[in-house]
Amino acid sequence: MKKDNKMLIKVLVALAGITLTVSILFFTPLWGTAILTCALSVMSCYELLVPTGVCKKPVPMIVCLLTAAAVPWLRYFGVAETGTLLLSLCLLTFAFLYSAAAGQYHSSKNIAYLFLASIVFPSFFSLLLPVLGGENGKRFVLLPFIAAWSADTGAQFGGKLFGRHKLAPRISPNKTVEGFFCGLAGGVLGMAIYGMVIHIMSQDVSWLSLLCFGLLGAAFGTVGDLFFSYIKREHGIKDFASIMPEHGGILDRFDSVVFVLPLFYAYVQIVSFA
Image 1: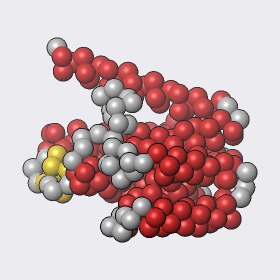
Image 2 (image 1 turned 180 degrees about the vertical axis):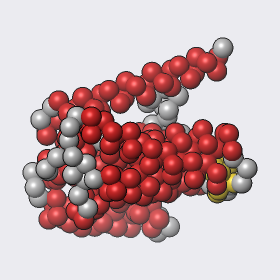
Image 3 (image 1 turned 180 degrees about the horizontal axis):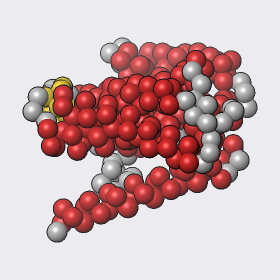
């Protein structure tokens, strides 16, 4: 009974999160998505730096959170390239001077974490803005989420049913080779279902582009999942946070999406879905 309750909570939280995300993306102006990406950036920044013990002092933590919050707004106001470049330079300068002044000469790896948390991942999240603001943005903005989460669902069920061979036992013991291929199938299936929805709405869609992205998105989503599992295993933590019951933190839920978003942005620059 307790296990059933946990599953019910997990499903309800997932539905609430999906409903909120879709509502913001579809029914608010572009600044609503900017607020969403800003919130995701700040929370993921905190989760990557604090639970891992990378950032223990308030001053660098505040600097990193402010930097992460600023990146989506630079994209929103159309100055992402110059603004992110200057932010990166300022953050690198600050991190070096602060570490040197504190005598932390062994913390060079921590500086890399600061950049991932404050610049790289917020830049990935903020790519939702140009996609949503572009042609057919509302029609296709959900594709990175569908590809990542349908692949994750396929991998979980496929791994439980057919899993025999471990995919990466030192990083994520529960992942299997069979689950990985089921995840690829799940990503393609998710794209196929969404393509049928678009088709029913009498809108044109390139099936080849859609299905190919499902396959690529599933593969990169698995890499993202393993990447964050690697970080958690390295630092001995189960979840990055507990903000979402039975799901963990933002990075626990969006781990695969983080890697699919930049892939999606690059993909739409080359290939048309319409």
